[in-house]
Each structure stands twice: as C-alpha cells, then as structure tokens.
Length: 128
Image 1 (cartoon, rainbow, N blue to C red):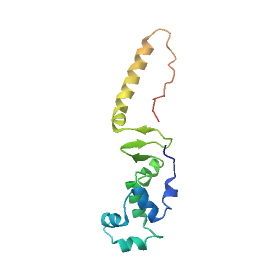
Image 2 (image 1 turned 90 degrees about the vertical axis):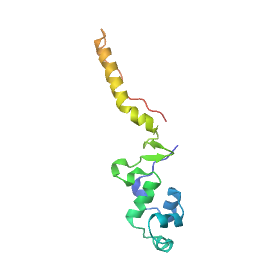
Image 3 (image 1 turned 60 degrees about the vertical axis):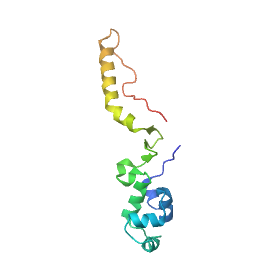
Image 4 (image 1 turned 60 degrees about the horizontal axis):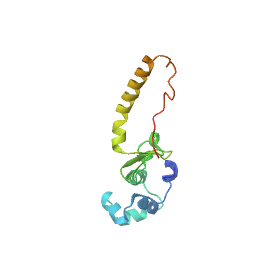
C-alpha cells in the first residue's frame, strides 16, 4: 500500500533522497540533466526547482506536473489514486465504455415498471 505524501513535502527532500526515489545514481542523473556530477553535488542543499520536479516525475509523483495531480502516482505501470486504488491502463481505457454500459443499464431499468429509484446512481466500482 502506498502512503500519500503531499508534493510540497516531497519538494523539500534533499537531492540524495530524490535520487533514491527516482531510483537513479548521481552519475545517471548528471547524464540525464546534462550536468557534471560535481555540479549536482553542489546542488545538495540548493537544488533547482526544475531538477526537483524532474526527479519527482521520474519517480512517478504526478503532483510535480500539476497540483491537480497531487497524491496521484505511477508505479509499476499502474496509476495509483491518492486513496490507494490502482488502475491498469486497460481499466482506464475502459472507463468510457463502462459509463456507456451504466447509462444503457439505467435506461433499461427506467423502462421497467416500478423502477423510479435507481440505487447507487453515481457509483463506479474500483479495487484496491
């Protein structure tokens, strides 16, 4: 289970912690950022914001892209919601079809006698 850490808290992490989260070495980061390892070591306590956000995105923290995505993560090819639900790419692709199926189901239920109230109108099941 993944725990939620606000993006602003993650942005305060030291460079070494960000590298660990992104699962890359200082040398790999220096190649990716087109800077020397020496330059990165100088950023130890004053890392540029764009580098912090790059490393957070590389680690799967989508809040570094936009605050609207704070708490959302990508991990092992799955999208993880702030409350811990996981969605695989196929499940995300299927969402419009699920909405269409639910709409059709509701239409059929409305045509049935004695079915004015449809329970759970806004519920779409997810799994943890």
